[in-house]
Amino acid sequence: MTLARHREAKNTYRLPQGEAIRKELGKFFRAQRLAILDWLATGKKDMGDPLPDAFPDWNDFGLGNLAMSERMAPKLEAIWDEQGAKFTAKIGLDANDWEVNNPHVADAIDKASLDFCTSTNETTSLDLEDALAKTREALKASLIEKGESVAVLTKRIKAIFDGAETWRARRIATSEASRATHAAQEMAAAASGVVTGWELLISEDACPLCQTIKRRVPAVKLGQAFAVIGTHPSYATIKHPPLHVSCQCSMNEILDIDKQPKWVKTLHDPVPEEEDYAPGEAPESARPKKPAPPKAVKPKPAAPKKVKPLVPAGKPVGEALAVAPDFSPNMQRQIKGAKDAIDKVHGDGNLPKIPIEKINKGPNAGQMTVVKGKPTKIDIHTHTETPRITAAHEIGHFLDWSGIEAKHRGSLGQIDYRKDPRFNGFLEAVDKSDTIQSLKDVRLKESVTVVQGKLTSTCKVDKRYVNYLLQDHEVFARAYSQWIATRSEDPEMMAELSHMIRFGEKRTYKDQWDHDDFKPIAAEIDKLFKGLGWLR
Image 1 (cartoon, helix red, strand yellow):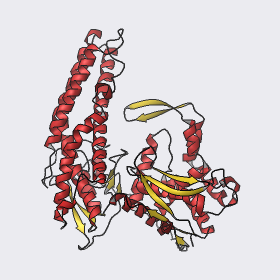
Image 2 (cartoon, helix red, strand yellow):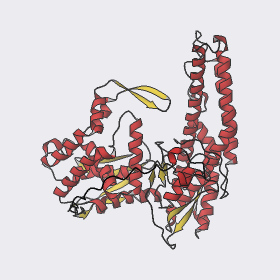
Image 3 (tube, rainbow, N blue to C red):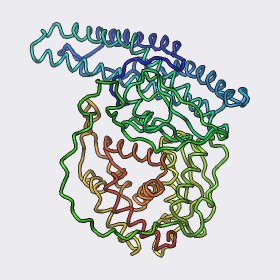
Image 4 (cartoon, rainbow, N blue to C red):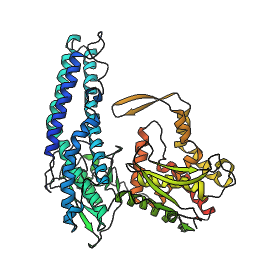
């Protein structure tokens, strides 16, 4: 998570501190220390250079992400088990209904364990690479002798693991115990049918970041994120505490029998303001600027005519889509949320009915199966980080194949957009967009440089994948999903979209549009759908 360091917070709400996680992490870090130091001393590098070119992968020592996750998952499961049952009883349901052996719960625990172990190992590897780079710089600057370099690197490695085995293990354990507690509550709430949302509870000495989130987003609907911070694929979207490393904030359920609060939209990369700091502690950047001198008053122009908002026409698209019952309650809610967002934006004609089914293997977040030019089903991956955008994307393909009547179609049954004059405005806006232009530029190169934090790498351009991204039917599906998110203003879809835009900026191939870049495209889709009779 791309957040600054935070001080230790008081455990105001008596959250589990993850002592079992801390102990197991300490053991794992010690095993990594011994493995890397033994390798450095005995099996490292080319004989002509005292320093290695790079460190081996943790999997080479049997200490990779999966090995770590296998040891951490039981510790997380114990917290999920206790806290899920405790919460279920708290809201008046039978605690025995909560089972960590439930496949959906077990999958969520396994994913949470692998996510945190992957992030932990990545941080350790970056620290080691930084230590190696600093040692090389010192050697190059003649601050150390060539014969001293291994000893200096060894000292730096020991310092890394000294911190990892003590304060870092403690902070990770505190964070993951909080995450397990609140994730279990979120899943139990989604299955309960009586929880409508969450009130954020900040710890007694909450930091300015937590203060500003609490002040600006005191309560959210069930499943909605309080904030989206940074670009980490697993931790950027914050649906529950911890809000940052070592955070001790919590949340309180809002039931359907309670007075419903004013629901607030998700924050995106919030910045604390002066009132979020203790008196006298706010930095200059957080203080309000002095107002500029008043400008001469100009006569007000005539008020523009109000534009009548577009509303859906035709039959609801959602009526054609049957969600398979074996999705987890949360995934069912997410897909229903995508269907509701679509029906809020536009209607359609007489679509054939197809199922939306789950997949849990393969690299695709979603996919549509086509047989003899006709869609037969839509699949959504159970672990996708963007379930609503993914569902809307695949439904966009469904409309392409089955919703829009067209004279010209491709070999697989998709619309031949370049031969259909109804799509001229859409294609012109798309072709002029910065995102599509950047993909076309990348396609002409053999390799590109990617910068991620301190790491810079050169990647060979996968021209086959870039050509796939530039196919008209694929561009339409991506544009359609972004249009639905933008026009419906669904907070969870907008949070997913924001994550995809920010994450795309860090990747080799950017596939979604910045908000300003997308405005002309959205306007053309408005015209297209109005012409199809799906908007009025």
